[in-house]
Image 1 (tube, rainbow, N blue to C red):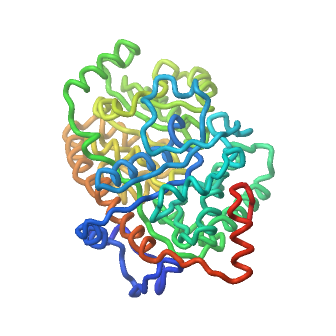
Image 2 (image 1 turned 90 degrees about the vertical axis):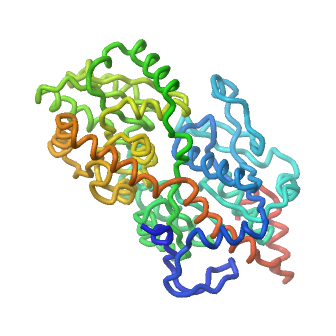
Length: 459
């Protein structure tokens, strides 16, 4: 597939605030950003995000992946994100340069997340001014995401955002007592209010664009999934041996048997319990396969109890979080990567598994359907335990098929590499840097600027 076929500019005409007249059907492609860089021009970019390390999730990985790729190309990136309690950093790497932490407090419905309190930081916008950004990019919708939008409005930057999450599908898991109809209405209203004023909205999957348009957001959309760094997932025999020894010593039950692997946040929204029914059927079929679940989250204790209640406790291993640099070896250990989530906006882990040559069996909904586009690198199935189990057993029982699907996965995953995705992202940034809006000097504009200059004034 050509690069331009992946990143289609889905709105005809002018891109509001980005100062570029577009031809109908024009596609964002690598050529624009390559031309930009050939002139020796580099940019300064600010990311505003309500989640970052040590918080482990897809948004964090996306920001880390793109910021690393941009820095390798000579661009400067400043990541504005929350402070986390000191103990959350235990066992993590030292803080990298280019990160600006804002004091925060606990998020009442998610122990893993934080709400930042920007009003306690003096001269906050002036500190951002000192960085001298060419482009500002919002990655989330909460306190820091709103702070970034206010900063853009006060300084005349086009508002570029990425919608990573389909919140409507998460609401029932975090607010189980709220009537579903009310929850959906609140989600739709808040998302519409957040994104309808943005100049460019980046989405990792077509489904997210359709959802936002359904909410009444009719701006400029760009589909740019997060890429995966193929160098990170290259073969490393020494690392593979070390990780295999570590896991088999820690969990002797996974020695000398076929391995199924799940990687992700252990939350109810990931549909992890679906895999327990699959494991029961796999045992009934005579296989001695084991399931390794890598990750952690609020539902882990509940799900561990559920495996015992369903009689598959001896077939399932919860490893908790592992170092990201060791994940390629974990993927390589597995015979099949299994992914039951139906809420993924992209499903980076499926790409990571395929880059390691591990065939995937996944429920073909949301971002997973965009990534796999059918049975590429494995099998994309319906939300049906019988069909899911049959495909897993088919791969486990046919080494030749598994080898073909492994080779297919390696080839197919190349279209999702970080280099290609970064080129598409830079094409959007190039327009933004060239079309930064001039600050108006009308009386109304001056009053508005006075109000929004205060970081904690909610416009």
